[in-house]
Image (tube, rainbow, N blue to C red; front, side, top):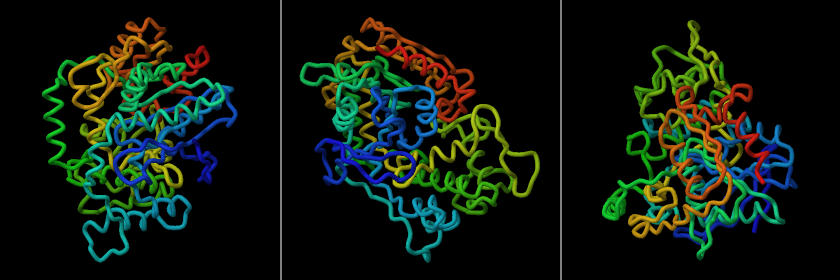
Length: 432
């Protein structure tokens, strides 16, 4: 049952009761950002990827509902995002504190113990080691049911790992019935699932055993601070959004990773763009790469010059988000990524039994499929979508942009340049 919540902005925010899962019951609540007409007869439900939050869909969702009459977009914020401390971020977005204060609260305290109060990270909670695909699918099923209430049509889509979750849901065995029976189409945005013989039963057992000895959270930065990637992102994006032309709040901070340190002093927008753009962002951060321009040739501090597909302000808006919901997941469950490797395009395999993954209806996905591939998913995303469509004998729309698009570009590119937007709109119009 969906319960209304006070909206944080022009977007409508509500919660759906999630699955009964390990951990405190307060996390069994899934937040959704709704854009478009409330009474729309069609809903596109979007699931974020690895370390992603619902808000990073907001700009492209706004573009979709503006161009597609009778549709609304629901962007799903997974349960792990409820662990985040948005107290200072919300105040910054409301212009109640400055980006400098935001930086002090979330990051500067790491090197200055005199700073109080400050952000207190969540530790290695044992229950998160059980927040895998089964929990995510059961949470998502309640969202899908709410979206389809009253006979509405529902298309499920996801970006990156969200695409894998989308395939998992469509092929999941719900008491002998494929999850695709709840849906009218699939949208895979540089994500999905292919048959993968490398994840064997033995490998799955090893991965589960290893997980018991390590943090339940994915550590993208390698700094043994799993939350740091998300916090760096919200500090940088909020500063770029609120004070784009001011000197970067991260300038001179000794704990800033060397690969994120520009060669010159920059503005907030300049530093943020430098960390994300295809040409300057480190290879290790390919999950956030996009084409948004470059540092200016001069200036002190050096500003950002928009160009190519998107803008630094659109990127900053995507990730800083709205009150209570940003575009990142500070705590991404490792178990969810492990289980994603067993989805196997919906084909039964030995690892599934070990992990409790029930994605076995790969030949029962009787709905049209859309897929777009970028540089990160090159060679895998379209292959997986094509194979899934072939097994189920359904229509498939494939868009190959692996030579010109990076992983975030389908969401961050401006409407006039956005290949995803230009191709998914006609696909959605044809959904039966």
